[in-house]
Amino acid sequence: MSPLTTKLTKAALTLDDGTAFEGLSVGQVAEAEGEVIFITAMSGYQEVLTDPSYHGQIVVFTTAHVGNYGTRAAVDQAQAAQAAGAVFHELWLPPVTHWLSERTLPDYMGLHGVAGLTGVDTRALTLHLRDRGARNGFIGPLGPDPLAARDRARDIVPMAGRDLAMEVSCRSPYRLKARPSLAVAGPPMSVAVLDFGVKRSILDGLRDQNLDLAVWPANTGEDKFLADRPHGLFLANGPGDPAACGYAVKAVRACLGRLPVFGICLGHQIMGLAAGAATYKLPFGHHGLNHPVQDSLTGRIWLTSQNHGFCVDPDKLPPNVRPSHWNINDDTVEGLEWSDLPAFSVQFHPEASPGPHDAQGLFHRFRQLLEDFHA
Image (cartoon, rainbow, N blue to C red; front, side, top):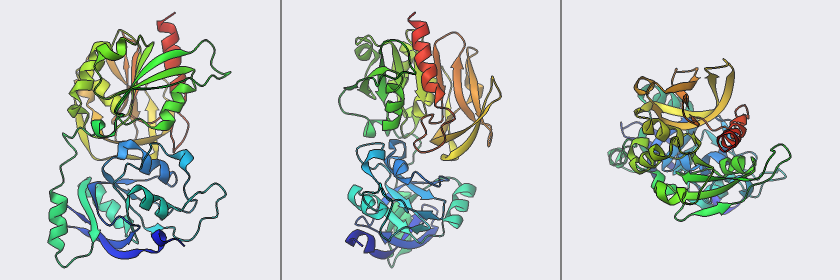
């Protein structure tokens, strides 16, 4: 075993309410802080840790054993890991024999600066978060003064009101060419992407629809990307409070009706705000690969991959915008559709990565919307 996987020292995750969960620190990074959330995924841990939507958060994995198939660079969703920390009941430490693995998960976390904590009673921790809501927390070595760790957690800036999209967005525009497919007829079309923390697999999902992409920083004004004369606008996933992204709400409001718009996750919430609705913070968010969502029009139920802590308030929507999808677990809004404009959005991640592929057809729906609008 490498030095990273054998470095195990006593540590704890301490929440801002003073509750502490002891375990063993793994890797080279001993401390981390952020909002503590739990995820019910049983696989896809590398995609989770590199999803920019988890930027600054400490992710608690509810499945008992994590890391057994290792990691490989090809499935990274961003150039670097985004989660601040990860908490496990049992992190796989022995060498990994999976034929595609390039390094163990503990080594990967050490390389990317993600603090790890294993040997934790994650069942008790998850129930605590479920009952009391997501809380700020601090991972650090066990010390003589437990109140010091609690105070560190209390000093963390709350997620509500934080604009994290600007922390993970690209710093300058870049372009990606379409990936032509026999399943998509017609010439390439162009789409402007507002990057609030976009996942690589979402960009691939768009490119597979024969779409050329121009990816712009989150705070790009509409005049700049509209001057590029795109056929459509895509609003990416990302972390933080959508209400803190006033610059994006303004840009999207100016674009609705001028060209087709499709939003995912944070992009969905920003579209809701642009329509005049409001958003609110969920108690512990939706984080997992098996969230059931129902299509309001067809009644069809999809299993979806989700990662978000905020939601659109359906009671504040204007008459021309209706909820198109609902979360079966808690009856929250999972999608929006405009009756008079070429625009729609979903709260979940249709490309999955990781997760089920029930909703991948939404990328094709966007392509069809572009063709119909520009016919």
